[in-house]
Amino acid sequence: MFAFFSGYLFWYPVIMSLFWITGSLLFYFRRERKEPLPLKESPLVSILVPCYNEEETVRETIAHLLNLNYPNYEIIMINDGSTDGTAVVAKELALKHKNVRFIDLQKNSGKANALYLGLLASRGEFLVCIDSDALLDKNALLYMIPHFTTEHNGERVGAVTGNPRVRNRSSLLARMQLVEYASIIGSIKRTQRVLGKIMTVSGVIVAFRKKALMDVGLWDRDMITEDIAVTWKLQKRFWDVRYEPNAICWMLVPETIRGIWNQRVRWAQGGVEVLLRHWDIFLDWRQRRLYLIYVEQLCSILWSVLWVIFTFLVLFNTAVTANIFNLFTLFSCILSVICILQFFISIALDSKYDKEMKKYYFWAAWYPVLYWYMNTLVVVRAIPKAIFRKKGTFAIWESPDRGVKGNMGA
Image 1 (tube, rainbow, N blue to C red):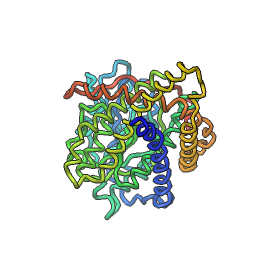
Image 2: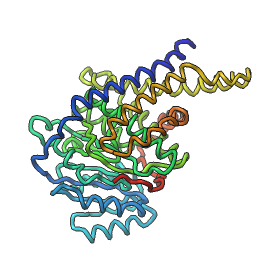
Image 3: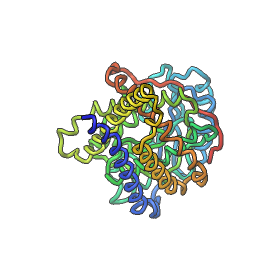
């Protein structure tokens, strides 16, 4: 049994890394290098901006939204019980700009609830949801909306997720996340799109067909990560979810250990909650295209738990034997090389959207050393939180670590 689990710890990441590399290359050659779908019509788009304690960032977000290269849209800001001056800023912006509206919620009831109420107030057939600290590229809607409107191509498209880019790059943690978003998240999105199913849209930038959201009962307001949950609901109802790498959105990421820990625990907890809620896909053969995504997530969780256990065993053995060379194995070296290879290929693909990306390749070396261990501990912490979390209550949010605004790239 020990040999089996130790073999699993090695072969799982090796196989999956090669799988993500192959999938991302297939996506690039089959779809990404082709010309984007043309915009032939411009339906009204409602841009929802949920806000919680975003007094310092929301002005910049709205300023970028007011300069989009798209002729027909409205902006709806939803203040979700902020305790700072967000409501004052939002009201001021709504009075100043005719296509900006403002919903003021007195109680913090979570992002999903804010989006829910924003949808009810929206006039557009399509919704674009963006975080209130993010800067949407001026051409993003030109790339996203044609997925919905192209004849014989878009009728079953329920959501299109965009391409988040990190704009604060002044710290080690921020630069590692910059590389991560290109090399890990970007590769996974591309590969899953080749498979036809996606684990999750990016909550920071995603477009929805309102009809599709209504069909699945809108967002689950009791789920800690509404973006993962609604992705699964849409795909279980056979709505297509797509990835559009040309739809760029510049975002801020945490730059403290505490900030990134809290963020990743929340993400991992949300992923586990979704797996617990949607296990019933295995009772329906029509959902078979989701099986692989579900099983891969389970395998990833198992790998994280085993990695933590084996790490403690190795550290204990090293302390007992006083042999520091126990920490350096051929397996760990191979895993690191495969990881760096994946980073190299993914950064090459993503440099099309971020010209400075290649110069941050050096920072990828820190990922296997630091990030792997943190992410595995995150999963171990998130599992009991997901299992024992009180069900049926609104998943409220807290003020995140926004990092330091460095080189923004936008």
